Amino acid sequence: MRAVVVHPPAVGVELADVPLPTRSVGEIRVRVLECGVCGTDHDIVGGKYGRAPEGASYLILGHENLGVVLEGDPAVVGFSPGDLVVATVRRGCGRCRFCFANRSDFCESGGYTERGIVGAHGFMAEQYTDVPEYLVRVDPALRDVAVLLEPLSVVEKAIFQGQRVLNRKEPTPGHPPTGSPSALVAGTGAIGMLAAFVLRVRGYEVVAIDRHDDTTPAGRLLKRIGATHVNAAAGLAVLGEQGFDLVIEATGSVSLDFGLANVLGPNGVLVLTGIPDASVPPTTVAAGALWREVVLGNRAIVGSVNANRTYFESGLRDMTVFQEKWPGALAGVISLRRPLAEVADAVLEHVGGSIKTVLEVTPPRTSAPSAG
Ligand SMILES: [Zn+2]
Ligand SMILES: [Zn+2]
Image (cartoon, rainbow, N blue to C red; front, side, top):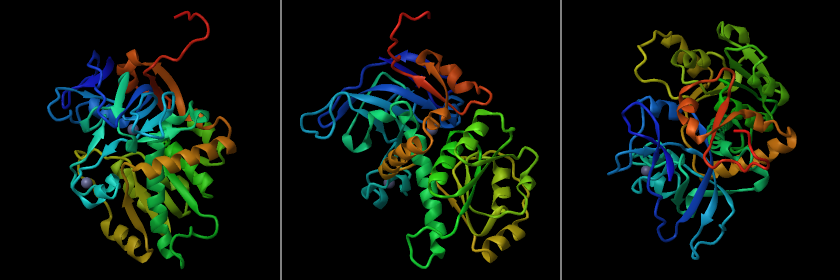
């Protein structure tokens, strides 16, 4: 079968012919329809990240996936050929207490694998096989947007974690803060945009910042969902004196992260989701003032990565709400669909103003003879 292959830590990516995966007892065979491309793929292709499976000479790339069930196992109930499915990414280490509790996103041994990233083949291939516990069935009504479910799951977890910390000040644990909470989203790539969608349906007043004016697709989409877009190219001073209850960071910029700690309101929570480059040179920060404000204002800084199955399921529920509230808006997060053969361009080029590029692993059926 055709697959997008990398050889970490070597730089580069290629389309290769690899063997079809064999289906073990209890597994389901899935034909891949689409795969989203993200910064992690870019880093793997750039040789900064990623690891081939044990004993393999290559890694099949791709973790943001949507597929259709081809073949099940008679012993497996709940999946039939033709069902749309999205696979989760992380596979637990099998030895730590969190992985035992199906919460591999909190794995503490570090011995996990991630499909398409570390130690397990990904989804930029014609087919894959997996056990049903890692497959989430998708309503056909969400066909056009379901490839966004994996990045949405990451956002669902980050916001849930942030809200858990915010809720610590509530008299009754588990209840959201009263009044109209405010949120800042830093970065308008797919993670930032999806965070704005989720925060809006959670009742937040949302401000989203990037380094562009309002005429970009992200700027227009934010307006559509009732969020405020601000061009912060000249710095965070443009935000004025407002302190935010919840800040979701989705850029991985080290210097920005410190600035974001300073726009937290009293009791505010900053959730970091961008993965900074560990090799950036040390920066100077006013550490005394920063930690003083954290303590005196009950502020918190939380890191969040990956997602377990529950966040894929909450993501599906939210997708349905987005579609009802702003019909067609979620599809606007996907800027570009490209055929599998254009993977190198899709991973390496950044088309200006584009939010998310999706690779069509299985070419969509065309109703008329195509011109090309
Ligand atoms: Zn991704
Ligand atoms: Zn573990």
